[in-house]
Structure formats: C-alpha cells, structure tokens
Length: 489
Image (cartoon, rainbow, N blue to C red; front, side):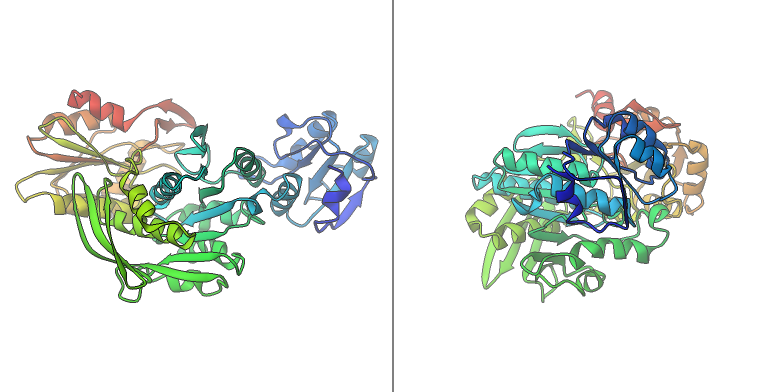
C-alpha cells in the first residue's frame, strides 16, 4: 500500500518529508516490531511514551512516523533518515484509522457483535459463539479468556486488543471464512480509541456498576466510556440493552440504531420469566413477539438468564432459527471460571471471577438460594492491587454478611503490599466471622479441609486466571487446580 493512500484518508496537522511513492509494509506501535517500510505510530502510554522510541524506529528504516508531540524529534533527523513525519492531534485515533485502512476495513466484511458492560461480557460472548456455530457458521471471538478464529485458539493478553491488533485479527477471521465475530468491548478500549472506526453490526449492553474507577476517576466517566459504543453505532446496526438496568436509558439515549431490550421488565422486547436454577443449570421462559421459548442452559444462576436472553436476541435479530438458538444455548459448555462448580461428593467449590461488589453479591445470593440454612457457605476472596481501592471495604462487608465464614486472602497484589489491601477490606466489616490467610493456596486449603460435609465454598476473584501477579511478576497459580488438588479430584 502507498503511504499517500493512507494520508488521503486521515486528518494531518503537518507533514514533513516526501510521501510520494513510499510503499508501506506494516503498521506498528511497538518500535521493537518495526521493519523496513513500517509506519511507526508513537503512543503515549501509562508506563512508557512511544515518542521516546522514534529514533529506534528510524534506525530500522521506518517509512513514516506518526506523532502528536511535534517536538519529540527534530525534523532534520526525520528527513535525514528519508522518512516522513506525520503530525496528528491524537496518535491513538490515528493508530485506529491507519490500521483500519491498511488492513482493508476488515470489520465491515464480517458481522461483528460487540458486548460491553461490567459483568456478563465473557459468558454472553461464549453463548453467542456457540449459538452461531450450532447454526453452521464459522465464528471468531475476542475476549478476556481466549481469542478464537473458528476453533483455533489464540492467546488473549487484553480484553480488547489495541486497534492495530484488532484489525489484523478481523482480517485473519475473514480470510479463515468467519461470517461472524463476537468481542468483549472494555471501557478502557472505548476510552482509549481501540475500537475507533470499528464497524459493529450489533452491540449488547449487559449492565453497569462501579468498576475501573482507578482508570476512569468516577462513575460518570465510566458510564460515558460504555456509552461510546452505542453513540457510534451505524444507523443500520442493532443495539440490545438490559431493560432492568437503570442506566440503560443513559447508555442508549444518543444511539441511532435499531433498539431492542431484554430483561424481566414488562416492557422488555425479549422478556424473561419463570427463572429456576440449581447446581446443574438454569431454566426460564423467554417471550418475544407473542411467542414463548423454553430455555435451558447448563450454566448456573439467575444472572445467566440475562446473558442467555441477550445472546438469544442477537441471534434472533440476525435471522437465526429459534430452534437452532435454543439448541445452541443448551449446548454451551461451562465458561472457565464463571460460576464453575466442582464437587468431590462431600462438598462443593464454586470458582468465580467475581471481583466487583455487584458480581460478588450476585454469586453469593445464588449460592444462598441453592442452600438450606444448615449448609455452611464459606467465601475465599481478596482484592487486586493498584485497582479501585474504594471497592475493598464494600466487598468485605458483602462477603461477611452473605457467608457463614470468610477467609480474606491475597488476589493479584501487583505493586501493593497484600497486608495493606487486606486491612482496607477489613475496614468495611462489622461481623466477626472472618480470618486472614495471606497465602492464597493456604487459604483455599484451609477452606476445603475445615469445611463440613455438604459445605459450599466460593473462591472468588480470579476465575479463569492462571497466575498471581506480585511485584509486577506473574507466577503460575490456578484457583481451579488448587481446589481440585485439596478436594482430591
């Protein structure tokens, strides 16, 4: 591709050097990956500033560098390297726009379904993928646990990758024959323009509660970030939102696409009723356009009726047959670390990713509904470091109020001291039904060995994760494997 083809389609403040006849071999935001002919885009990150690596990119014969800091490097060095400097107002937006152009606008060539919200994104994405595959379609998935191109697994490092990586994956999905793709759209990705210029054919809003306030500073900014997905939907797209969430009104108020709601609310287009669940799964009725569908899923909890209903809505509005949709829901397998039930015959352990006050409360309420008063409920949990400090005492209160016994432990302390995090969790507790075991393995071992027969133990916070991050180093650790070892299964 010629550099001029890109320049003709983006807004440029200043151009230094001659772009004519320059062939572009790739788009990079990491200078280590620059090759001859690359366009290097300097991103101001939270730990490093890409403008500091412009010289490295030039040394590797980058054809052009895109900057937002005009003084990052003298123009003479750019021209002396036979490169082009492209000054823009926002390099993150430029990365998204240039990547979209370079990879041939791939999101317009597949039916892309975006899912945003505080909880339920991953499970909803797995439902949608399985439903469309059950109907005979090849489907891609981008999410927290793993990325997929059809059945091929690709490691996931971010819930929503950088825009350059996204567009490359969309192209690979199209080349592999994917007709549909489903992706989790994080608030970070929306605020940082990772999905800028991405074309969504459908978008789902699951719910919203306070989360990531360390990044967004306040709930209103967090809400505005989620809202961006719907503000930018094309008029031809479909927005599907939770009618039971009070903030749905705010999220879709400026959305110009077709709108459909789901939930137990009487006005919901896809109305949920008659929810019933046990440790083997969940059933409910779903009503749409004067028809009622009996839904059964192996995933546990009333919250899964919402995830299922939104997935049903996406599939139905994309023209799939209702019988195929119902079968796709029924055959969706357990999502790793999402209310995943383990049992050894004498006690049960629930592995769950619940790391927010709302998700922890919902998980414990489901467990309480499934147990009689004489069955003890134990919770093992901690809070991540360098994240949302204000949620720590709230989660401490929820855990101790809804559990018989609680073990407060370490999660991913990152660069904080585990004992500091634990003290902040304790500050919200008024009951005397907890103890502290900082070692997560020892906490899980203690909960399992000291629990009585029939007990249910919730191990919350990490779910599918297979590491603990301490002082910036990730060490292998799995809640599931640890629990199974001490359960003898």
